[in-house]
Length: 602
Image 1: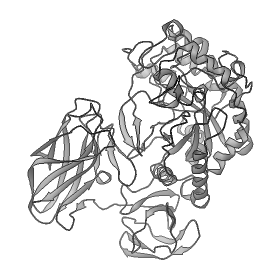
Image 2 (image 1 turned 60 degrees about the vertical axis):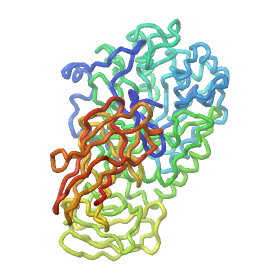
Image 3 (image 1 turned 90 degrees about the vertical axis):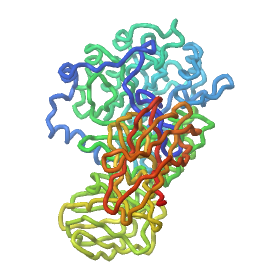
């Protein structure tokens, strides 16, 4: 999809991903995206004067849903990632852009697009069986091809292909029939087919693509948005790739919002319009977005639109751990499928969704309608969610001696395994600390435990510091670090790393407890993309430079972690200390991806 504007690399779950920056060229690469002044933006925001009560009512179903299906399906499915024998090196739905296919040649794909195996009821059934509560489908992606019977422009699946059907309408009706909410994705500014549409990096077929953006909005984008909102009545409108627009452009694009006061729209319209939901793409934010509604969108493999040769599918375990992690931070998981040109959802995606559904059938109470964990950190491998007077613990790896939960001041009245109903023994060890019996049977992915409390959970967490290993050294892992900054993020699964370190003012720190004074050698496990090497950093101790510094060498990719021993040693006395990595320079896209820092006693 590469749908967040625009591209900065990081690594998660085995694949390169993109982060959001605010620049989308309109016809040429040096056009900048400048937000409208605050007051002007407020006057253009359809929900600027909404009361909290109305917003809460409007967002209620979405906040309870937690899990939805994203569908990227369009004309880009036809080439399956290959054009004239050349495989696209990027994602499937960007093949026209990345291989610079002329507009007329790409449009000729319409003659081959006849997905007779498409069955809306089957697609919705797959989503429902997976435990998903809503679907968002591409009504028009950046290729400019409408997947609905648009009366505005004939470049659509009904008028331009042999198929002569309206998948958006059929999906809307199937969702209504099966009790799921239905939403549409619409690329409001980036359009590589229509004259005047924006294109990242500039147009490559100027005779067909050059034109006036405002005329494009007036004649194509705004009328199609109005069609979608008035004829199909989606619950969600998922904008993508913002471009600087005039106030009139924004008014035209949002004119039909009044037809449905319950409509939910994301934050990618841009131009100072905040939208209803934050949209992190391909990663789970380290702390979520406290106080905001947010939704991680993610692929199952490395592409959004179908590519026949992309078989790098995430495991069911990772997908479920992502869902659990996201719910524990108060967010939703919008998980993508990329159907084949025949209209079939690829079997590996269906299989993983079915397995997720099996787990959710037994453990969904810990996800749906839940709110974020009251804990910043758990002392076991797992996650926590809350629902009124219940605390749900999803335990990925159960300690041999049972679970210890610290900092919970509210009395625990009982505990049970969600999947089996088996009651577990709970014992109060000390003030705020509870031990929970280990179940006889554990779920290989996550064992969900329900704790019934005497009231809403009150949590007072103990101050966390990393203790020394038996040899007196310290292994300071990414998941134990405090991240300071706007862009830096924790990403990945159990062996996590820190990415999105695109701002050199961001820092990483750990608090440690030293029992015995010693001189420590320092090593760092880091990675970077070729061309992004050369960043430098200092190691600070308790706010002052330690005299030890390092540089980021070249590695094969953002996922290729190498251990680098830094010159010099640091002296630590008994007590608590804060170890901080402070960047000094960042010559390329990011400082580095960081897995851990290791202190070895001399």
